[in-house]
Length: 57
Image 1 (cartoon, rainbow, N blue to C red):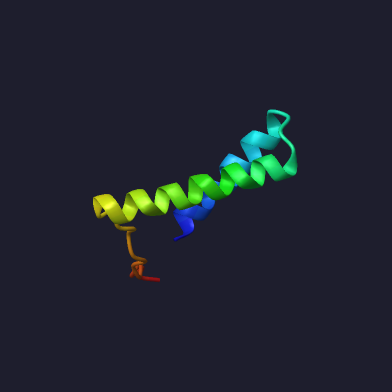
Image 2: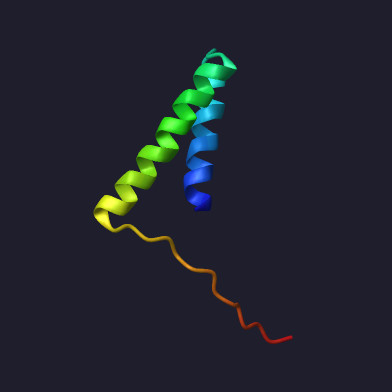
């Protein structure tokens, strides 16, 4: 889930950097986030799971 949020947040940042208004950036951010989720379900994409790092002291 976090990668979609990062992708959406990055999109928001780029749109505002390019001079877009907050509402336009939010709409595009939502579209990218939802579109990514739909593509993930359609193509069976999965996110990696967290793993415990076993480090010796």
